[in-house]
Length: 198
Image (cartoon, rainbow, N blue to C red; front, side, top):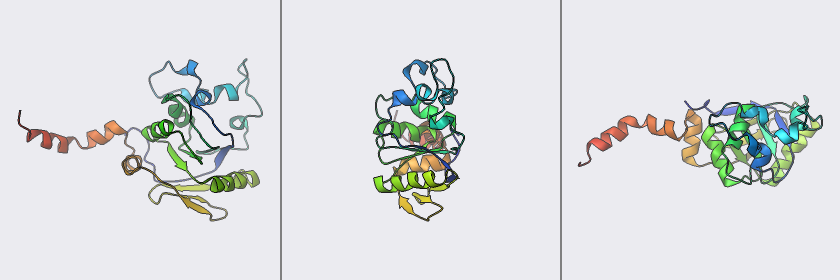
């Protein structure tokens, strides 16, 4: 499998209420030389996380031990900018399995779905409820239910449904990327090919 199966995720969340976070901020261009999906998490939000001398910036949320979890909650228009798939790799490699926002750039959304990160788009009002809950309690937990396509604030019971492409949903439930999906259909493809005139 390309990545872990995603079914129901219960986790605390890391809040980043910043709008228009682009892919160059997620993973700066100077770190795009590698072709494997490993090691990018170390440089996730590199220029926001570290000073030029490599020391961590105390005021950046990923350096704040108060917040942790497998869910990253971002502001509107998360993942805009260039189409680099390394941005999704960095999010996954850092340990996030879900990003929640009120709007995603289409290419970033697709790249996330290809590597096992679930992009959950919610309404602006529900996103504000999530940020408010985290502000009240950094240990607040959230449930992201892919089969039911819901995200729930467990402390309050507030819930909202989200949309996802059926093909991508099935792949995430099975831990498949596009190649895994085709490999899983190998016998069907061979059977179809055997019936073709050559």
